[in-house]
View 1 (cartoon, rainbow, N blue to C red):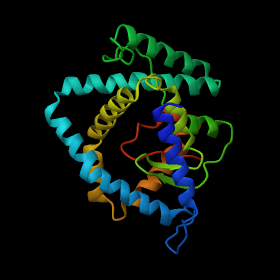
View 2 (cartoon, rainbow, N blue to C red):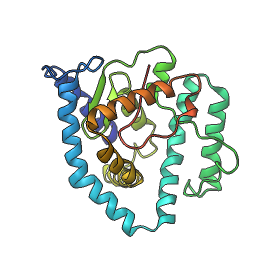
View 3 (cartoon, rainbow, N blue to C red):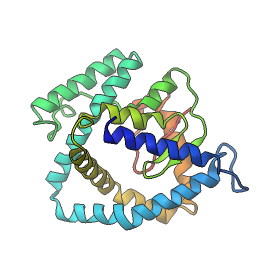
View 4 (cartoon, rainbow, N blue to C red):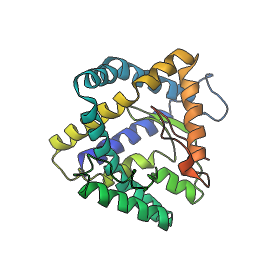
Length: 241
């Protein structure tokens, strides 16, 4: 078992064990795990405040914009592997073909994906994951679930953490390489969300409820008949039926 998959499984195991402690009066209809979720959300918030956000801010200040764009393109290109796999599982032949062409085009002409030639060429990006594949076949989303470090999810959508780890081309690399790649991707993604999370903290009286509702609405929209009409979410966002 590779490091990323092992970490994902460990996270899921901890979350399941914590479910037994999710009792208390602080509970909203449709969110039976709210007491536990709020505890984990608070923990994630502290990690973000003292580790993730400072690292992302420094990254944004030190790394030139063209380089940040290239790094973002690289990880977006890797993501097309998962998009292709899930579109194939959902029998979406056209979307799967476009995802495969995007990956091939950007991996070659785009120099390993650092340059995005596929989008200007008219090849749309389809945002898919295994949670949406399960939704496609009628699997309900289940209770909302906040995962340590991973953020918003659900009982159904937690599966995408494991599947994404398996589909990552670096999953067979040495642990040091995996950790380095994961760290760079994490900081890059967090830097893209600095403005969004600042607005969240300023506009929301209850960040947890706002994030939960936004996640669930988005997942429901993505699992609808036209999932690609939805925009890519900022931080801690997703949804389901």
